[in-house]
Image 1 (cartoon, rainbow, N blue to C red):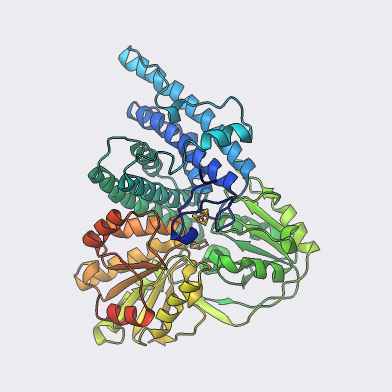
Image 2: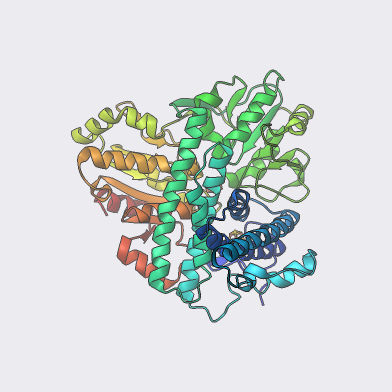
Length: 560
Ligand code: SF4
Ligand code: SF3
């Protein structure tokens, strides 16, 4: 029996599955197995959650917990076994409380026999919370535990679960920023519950995939409105890539509120704050760029962090994914917060209601650290989210009509380690001068420093923000379709998406739910898609794997 089984990300071993003592990402088998058990128990919460909700029993804390626990299991978010043990214990406590309330309500309504513990995931209890006990159970509940399961059903179940993980990440960020949408939280449980239905057919599961995409879109919209309500609409901004003298804190991950509170707590201290990876787009929000000590962006995408964190010299704060195995050269000055975690790395606790997180330990580490060593200089343009692009919609439409812009190519998504990702740099380089790249997510680091120029004042790389801001690309595409009186598939618009983790999965499902066709996906198609499921997606949506850059550019320019 393999030590673990995980195939949720693009870098899974040999594009089949990580099965050894640790994943390609560095996730130890122990953590992977605890994550499997946590997901199993979230299905148990969902068993009672869906039944309770039907009778008016709702628990807001449990609903949000399901999202946060799903978020904790996304690739490169949390490598800390102890955090997963705590999450497992909390899942069982919340599940049992929900079961009690649901059964109580059932008795009130029907005065009948509403007892019973439901299926194993809805009633299982460990004899204790030792690692030994939990890991013994985890071995019975992993992705491949049921060897008799139809591989296509397994594939669709996992596709939905990975989409839910991405949705959960977006939703948790939105809740932190002040947004709320109970229907999205309710859907996560509805969908998790369906993934346990032994009699669900392929048609049932494909319908669930569609619905997951629809709710994914809803979660993306919720996050967009939560962030922009709090910090304003991103505006075109030239971001400095160099460093300033003095101590610094490097903030990575995706959470805007963490950055905001850190900026407030460092104001006037002489400590500069820099963004890293997916925090780059925060430099464009009026509510964040107003801080003079937000000094710019340092480094590149997540996978280069070991060298960059070493060179940075100051303190580092990981607000979410992607954290990679921590090296000794910066171990004493890196911190996690939120759903991120790494064993032995100090974790900044969640905020108490009405209060900020306490970042004093991070600030002290910055003051005790070295000044950042400059990696590069110059600036890059960011801030082309939907409000900015739509404010110059007339100019964009005119450029399309005049032929100055021949085609838009959406190249958003994730970056990653594999050398095959040079494909995306080559596509960007080879696209004709009359094309515009629309991007979001850390995939942009493959081409955002190439100086690809402008078309009539419009940058050829329009950066809408984080992967969390992919919603902007959908808004822009929909607005263009409306302006030209055609469907999105009839626009001079191609999709060439890079994926790595599960937020890209929900973006893909959202696009498919809108009926977007001819999406290219790479560097490889997901290992969790069975050959039959791939065939369904190919015939229904013309989904395709990437091929050679020049060939793909030619095909895309011809509308294929
Ligand atoms: Fe492997 Fe990816 Fe899972 Fe990490 S997240 S264990 S690399 S499949
Ligand atoms: Fe990147 Fe992790 Fe997905 Fe947010 S930081 S896009 S991979």
